[in-house]
Image (cartoon, rainbow, N blue to C red; front, side, top):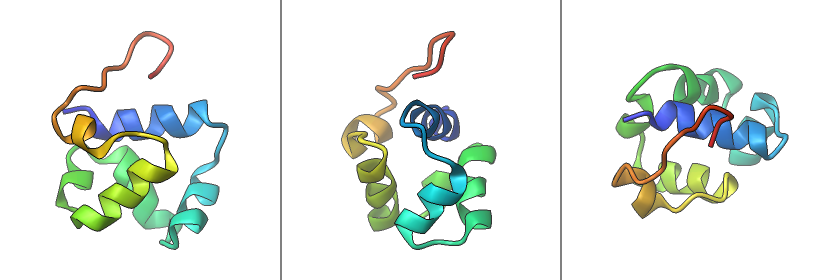
Length: 76
């Protein structure tokens, strides 16, 4: 699953920095960076945290976990 890439692409699409995303989620920047940079890291987070990330990025958690989001050549 390319969850980390989906998260990064959507954040960029929304024009948000990693720092802004981390602050809005109330987590450390270093933790947020792991969600974007480490494949599978987001799958080890609590369901409530993943839902908060999805809400911030305007993504549907069900579609995310079912792998229904895909990247194209320009991002999400």
